[in-house]
Length: 265
Image (cartoon, rainbow, N blue to C red; front, side, top):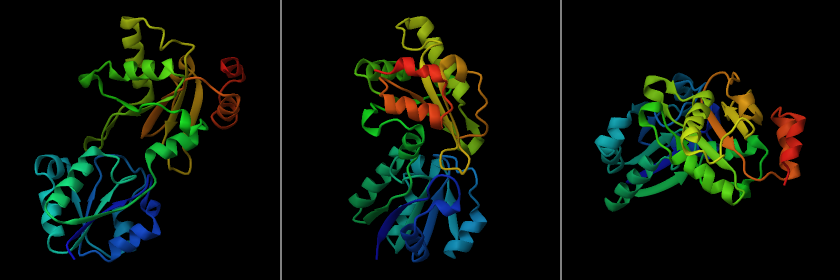
């Protein structure tokens, strides 16, 4: 069957794939995998090959973005092809484009979902899922943008939390740190002076979501800007209005200070 199956790998290691995802991989004619959209800190390609008993073709950003996934589409025209992606396979817009191209070429597509970094971060935070507004990515300094600050400001106007995904270049082992992200937001604040980011702004940093030992630290910006979160990947949350249960969760599960209770609304 001419088919392209997008399979999520999960977040941390080769054990994060679902049973369904592993079954689909074992029965594929050809298997591709990308590792540039996210870091899986403890993933072992050799161990994964032993699990699925398949040869894995690792592809890079150029294969997908510049060559439009030609290798994958050509394989899918000849038989069942699995494309392995960190997290949930269609969170990255690059992969949505690949699916559209496949359907246009009359290649059947299916999705086997994996654990998403977005749901994992929200779960670890202890904040209420329905109170999150628009998500934004904070870029490296060379791609400086005021958009993250503006999104946080817009979300705060309606009391909503902001999930900030931090930029990465997995192929060159570069990961924007939580400390650098805070510095970037403070730089914009010094220019716009809207009172969105200050030393008393509540924030939550998360490192290695999906790992057995993630670092989750909540507090005020002044507490987080020099905090050591350990190894990547990283994410930052700027909360909006906090319910008392959310504050309880931040204190109990994210080592937030007791005086955070003064922020309850």
